[in-house]
Length: 193
Image (cartoon, rainbow, N blue to C red; front, side):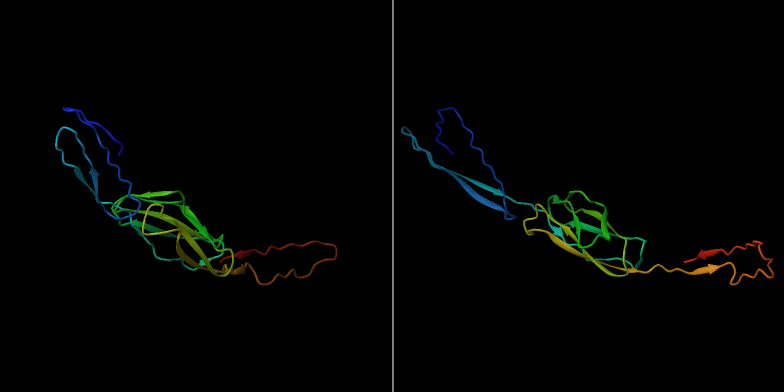
């Protein structure tokens, strides 16, 4: 605070600004030195306090998809909770490690009010047989207790398509055929898998 003179009967304003950079409460003082050549004036002390409220990112559980046939799809919902006292902001979520998993909804930057949750829906469409692993990356932007990206592991298993072929007949018999004649019969092949 710079020097300021307050004439008799006048006033001045001192602005106190707080900008918490951590989750710690504020308990400080502002000391104002006074001086007067004509009167005895005591220095002034102003107590400044603030309860700093912060969001709190609650790490979701890992995601396990149902066993899924190639070409089919499964989906799982990930709930992201804010158990803190102020709104939580998250960067746009990302899926890494596989192209068989993708974000179906909730793929934008999220703002979660205090005591609330938001959902992200993840899809799994296996392209190969076997185990598939991926990672859902979530980055809280304003939770002072968390630094960087948080990773939620995702797993699924691709299984082969089940094909069951049936035919309308197991044999074709044309009997006696004259030379030069053309005979036809149909066989219907059906995949009932």
